[in-house]
Image 1: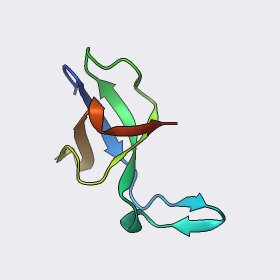
Image 2: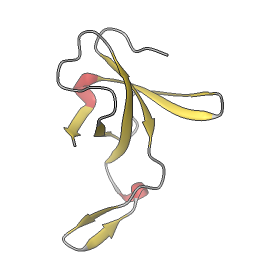
Image 3: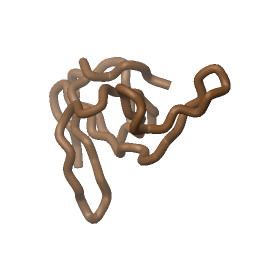
Length: 82
């Protein structure tokens, strides 16, 4: 699969928790999700395959392929590249 234009194809990391000031914040209590970039479109400049990103919850389109969950988001929905 390959993303086109300004889109990013990623795998969502389920159940990922983060620590903020020593407190663990579960995935369902955040305004964003964490994903691993699989493919980027030709118009995407600052993200590359293999990057881990934070993106807004509920953004993009969810789909499954061979039993794996993917998300296709626009590059403008990326919050942070780790």
